[in-house]
Amino acid sequence: MKKLSYSMPDFKLLAVAYIIIALGISMVYSSSIHISRSLYHDQYYLFKNQLLWLVLGTIFLMAIFNMNYTVFLKVSRVLLLVNLLLLIVVLVPSIGKKVAGSRSWIRYKYIGFQPSEFIKISLILYLSTMFNKKKINTESFIEGYLPPLIISTLVFFLILLQPDFGSAILIASIIGLLFYISRIKIKFLVMTFFMILPFAYYLITRVSYRKMRFLTFFDPYADPIDKGYHVLQSIKCFNLGSLTGVGIGKGIQKLWYLPQPHTDFIYSVIGEEMGFLGSLGLLLLFAYLVFRAFKIAYNAPDKFSFLAASGIGIMWSIQILINIFVTLGLIPVTGLPLPFISYGGSSLITNMIGVGILLSISKAIEKEKRSEVHII
Image (cartoon, rainbow, N blue to C red; front, side, top):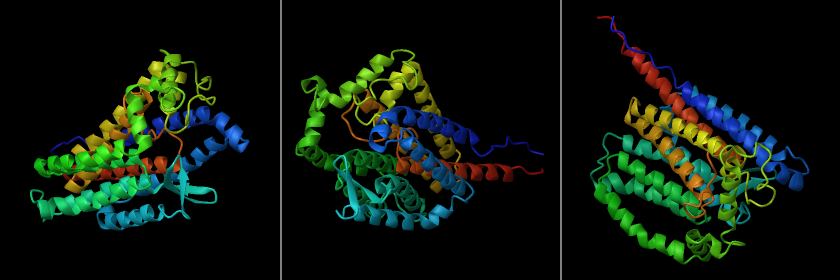
């Protein structure tokens, strides 16, 4: 008998994901008490909503986990088409709702969601399917590079039209890295990068509020009451939190000083209430989560699952870094939530779907390893 070590489906990934979610639920409650009480006359309002999204996300996660991941090879085009249509529909003024200047929400009565969140997973699965084709020539510009580039560019521009510059940057980063690990020629990627530089310059310098965000990034104290207010209040959270924090629920910056304390700047609340040690602990949990994703990618049984798992790991990595860098004042404000932590159903469900896909792939890895055990 040739003995090989068995690899269980990656329940370590599942465990660390739910540990992070549990911390997120706690911090959503802590950061939203006063907002919920003031706007909805119920201090548990946003907390209860997040719990509801968690239940729905768990249903999606378990359903996908119990599927064979190869199902997504067959449905990735349909999923992308549906999400593309939603990105178009959200631009219709009578349907799409503006929040913080961006028409990125579709709402019906008390139900709302962001198509820009779900498109991330759809695009990852679609590109993974495209580059999985045996006949695709990744060294050819016309046959291997141009078709997925056209689709990816369409998604990018539809998100920019909302406008949602933060999500567009995230999408562009995911696309570029997926193209790279798919063995697309480097010269194609470099050429595309230099072609979009003038466009990026225009988007930053010719749109007034983006230009002000960019300039304020270099000197937030130049306009501490308006443009630099978000960043300065966020940094103050970390100063107040010091090493061990003031205690969960005892922070003062969330009391109408720090904007969006339960969404984009929830990491700042964590910094104040849990201190440097708590913030670092969360970073280590995120690092382990991403490590498990890339480990699944490394052991993936085929190219599609390798690219899909890598794409999910890339998505988490970039979004976590962007959100945390914003709260620390290291990059301009972009408006991206912190995965698994920030309040919001679309974000939480999307990330839990990602966990479900990774678990489904890890289950296939286990099955493949068991099939390698044979009697000599």
